[in-house]
Length: 145
Image: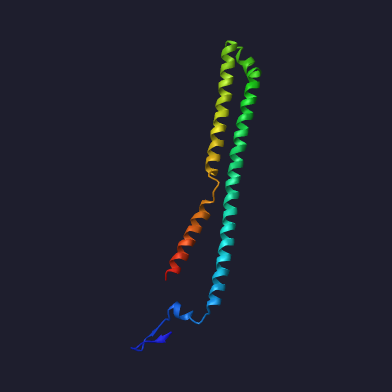
């Protein structure tokens, strides 16, 4: 702090406080800070991509489950469900009902898997990209001062 003409004390601006640093020191600090920033952005991108990969894995698993249920549905079509329903309905009606129910289950699983895959794409680290853009803007702003 320094006194003004009227005797009051004021806080020294940050620019005056750092005027005693050499250009080499300032470049060294900037390089160190930029290096730290890049490492942090890379870590954020890795974390974000891992999260999207987990979602894609869940979606793929659900789609695989849908395929398995559809396959089992086709096998069960000739099995127990048809035989049980054929006691009260015509055989063709029993087979149609069992087939319809199994395909509805497969459709629900497929829609759930598709929703998981959509949430995982595009596999770009959106938060990291936004953060890097903000960093670039801040650097540009400071460079113009």
